[in-house]
Image (cartoon, rainbow, N blue to C red):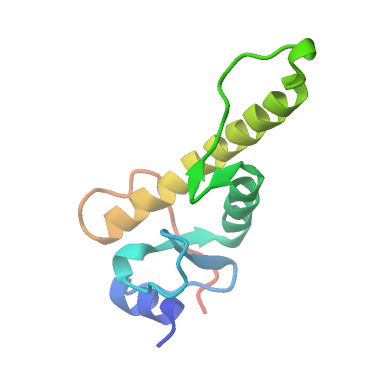
Length: 121
């Protein structure tokens, strides 16, 4: 069974192709239900695009936090990194709503964001 079907069966939900099942640890070999998160396709793409813009080393964010000016030669790079980080944080917060939705499906909280799936397959 593929991970989309596994998610559908485990949670008893139906969803169409406008949703993706994201692997939280970014390992597509890990189909444990705890590692799967339903996201709208557009948000899933935004997440991976924002993640790809971040300077990463061994799956860790690698950011120089020193304030730099024009003479230091790093002002433009720091502005880019801060912009990329800001974009990632915005997308991350939107993904958190879907993490809360999964907690709702697990019976742990109410549907606090009012998420309703559309486009059932």
